[in-house]
Length: 311
Ligand code: 3HC
Image (cartoon, rainbow, N blue to C red; front, top):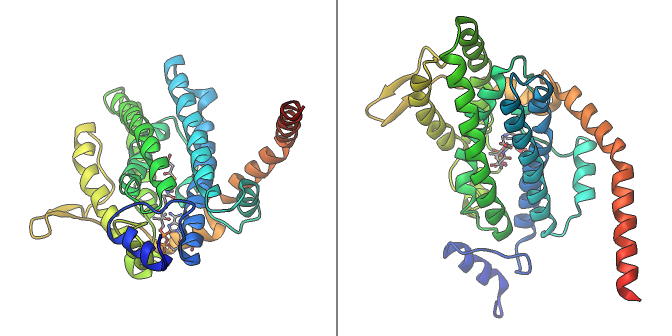
């Protein structure tokens, strides 16, 4: 890294290379990465709840097996991301504590209820679809461990999105009641999925700095627009309509004009006043408490193995 580590850091960022855990990095770079990666991990873990709600009520063994696999994948994504955050010098226990005490966030999208089986399709198609739009650029994030975690996660998200799309396609081409259930689900999840990309760029506290450090490669609004443009054709293929009468192709912009989500609602949900925030946190706190014996047993076993090695 030579005499001046800050020059080296800037060179690495400018050359689109990776900053690695042992490299010098500005304290603020480390802190914003811990913030973003930890909250990303928390989102994956909390995100297991809305879908977990339907595992015992899946309409067939095949759908149950696929949903089980998807929920287990989300836990694994949380694991990769906590491990990536730990390379920045924080412990997973500390991060979990920050979540459980409400000092760190998780994605707004998981504070909405899953009211029908069709929601399993819509979450796969829209929420995992949005996640892919957000996470593919993160594979080129300047921090090595985060970028590498994203590569594996994006592969699994593609499976998540395909299985969700297929559920919706089956329902949309099923009985009128199934069609209606699919359309109702899309109507409920469309705007919260747009809000998932974060506040508009002019209200985004971190975007400018995160873009300068090549953590973020596109802004919130750029990714939101990309997501809308991707979904319009897919909705047509599904035979479902997106609940936005203002949606229309704009030749000049080469993109769809669309109605923005309610950012006041997003702020309320982020602050903890969404439909399911309390339930999600209570469930997580209880699960954490009930899992204490597993953590103690694993630690005791690890200590025993370590003793054996020393003898
Ligand atoms: N939900 C909750 N908080 C949000 C949010 C959302 N949808 N969007 C923004 N925020 C928060 C930010 O965390 C920040 O608060 P903080 O300073 O306390 O962290 C504040 O609102 C201002 O927003 P910014 O745009 O300035 O924040 P960022 O630059 O961090 O951008 C982000 C927000 C786009 C979510 C970015 O953090 C990001 O890309 N994170 C990684 C991806 C991620 O976390 N995805 C969550 C979904 S997980 C998932 O999709 C699982 C899949 O399996 C379904």
